[in-house]
Structures are given as C-alpha cells and as structure tokens.
Image (cartoon, rainbow, N blue to C red; front, side, top):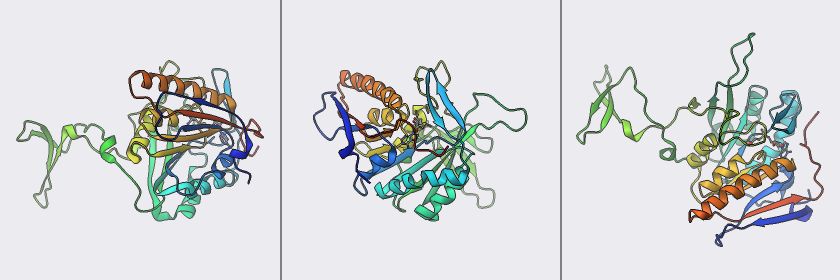
Length: 319
Ligand SMILES: C[S@@+](CC[C@H](N)C(=O)[O-])C[C@H]1O[C@@H](n2cnc3c(N)ncnc32)[C@H](O)[C@@H]1O
C-alpha cells in the first residue's frame, strides 16, 4: 500500500507557541492509509469508535456520515485490517479500546480474541446512559460496549488517576480513622478479618459506567457532528492507560473527542477521519482549546493538519 506521506494534498500547521516535541497530527484520510505510514510499536493507546453498522445515516446539525447496515461477519471483515494494523502499531505496554454496540460487538470480540490472544482481553466496559428514544417492544437498549485488550500482559494501567467516589454501602459501616477521616469498614463473619476502605481515597471504577451521560442537545460540549462521545468517557480511558507525553491514536476521530482530551491532558496524538467535515470540526475544537491552553501559560504541541490526495470522501464500508 502507498503510504500517507506520498499522497498528501495540503497541509497546515497550527502553532500554539510550544516549540518542544513533535506536532500532534489530524489527518483527513482513510484509517488504513494513515496507519500504513507508521512504524511498528509507536503507540501507547488506540481508541476506536467506528460506525456500528446500524444501517442509518447518522445526522446532527446538518452534518452526517453513512453507517451502512452490514451483517456482523461483513462488519468484522471490514474492520479486520484496521484492527490488525492497530495491533502492529501498539507498544508492548499499549492498549486497544474498541467502542461498539449490540450490532457487532460479540463478533468483534471473537475476532479480537484471535488477533490479540484470549489472555490479552482485559475488560468489557459497559457504558450506560438513559437519554434518547425507547422501544415498547423490549427493554431499552441503553448501553454501548467498549472492549479493552492489552498488547502484552505488561499493559499500562494507572487506576489511581481515575478513582471514583465511594458510595454509601448497605454492608459496610462508616467509622472515623485515627486522623478523623471517614472509613468504610466491614468484618468478614467467617474469619473475623476487618476490611477498611478510606472514603476520600475513592475506588477503581467497576466495569459498568453509569456516571457519564450521553451528550444532550443543550450540552455545552456538544458540537455539530453526529454520535459525538462525551469527553469524560475518553478522559477515563486516556488517564487510566496513558501518562503525559504518551502517543494516542483514534482512526475514526469524528468530532475529535479523543484528540481534544489528549491535548488537554498533555498526551500526543494522531487521529484520522475520512470525512472532511469531521476534520474541520475537530480542527476547530483543537485550535480553540489549544489557544485557551496557551493563554493559560501551558501551550500544547503544534497541530499538523494533513489531507490525503486521492481520498474518496466517504467511509470505506460495505453497502
Ligand atoms: C462514531 S463516529 C466517531 C465519533 C467520535 N468518537 C466523536 O466523539 O465524535 C465514526 C467516524 O468514523 C468515520 N469513518 C468511517 N469510515 C472511516 C474510515 N475508513 N477511515 C476513517 N474514518 C472513518 C466517520 O466519518 C465518522 O466520523
């Protein structure tokens, strides 16, 4: 495959006044074209949120992208090269997060078990929300599934960065410790062992997330791109699995949520989208936030926006 560099049509460097380090990259390209140019083991985190194969044109505020209905097998076949390239590009300590819903997640899970090895599967994260329409013919479908795989058993995880508050619990009493701090406490009836959990230290979240709502129309964060994910969702993934200076990729960037979180959290990134309108949306978010960070005295890396010459402006999907 011809690499991205040899197909570049136009480029723009947005400078924020931070001369150190390499620029972040926002690419108008098919994911496979962008991936082909990158060396092995250069990424700490890949998060992808591809079209789910719903058969609907996804629309919001005049913007849209097609999400063709395909059988789960065809969907897996479509995504397979992107997943294989993601595996090649991850460092040994790197992680892949694949965000899907009921349409194909079970089929992609089986495929990823084959690609990474079953023992590299870490979590099936259930992101729950409640807004939006509900059918009267079944229980409301109100969650997405995010599959997490580590490239090796030595994958990076920084749970203390993403602790959530401890909730009152019916099977634990709250007592004060020697410093006057609240502690949840329980005694194992069989062994008599006492377990103590400082309330203010919080805890590692469970693998079901109910504390991050889907963006609604009036949300301040909302921009003109369909199926935009909340930045708090990406923040948990980014902070839990990378540290400042690490390199993050998102091959289906859409409005640029992953890049926006990476920029804010001082990580580097390379993100791609096949639609020029998505790239324009992400560029606007990143330059506005970059200027704010610069004005606050913490300029992020410069932003290199590039466009691939022979790009067809539509997703490489089955119809
Ligand atoms: C579900 S949206 C991503 C939304 C994003 N996570 C956000 O928060 O805005 C999927 C995106 O994948 C893009 N896309 C579809 N096929 C692609 C391909 N082959 N390469 C790169 N991007 C693609 C679509 O244009 C769309 O913007």
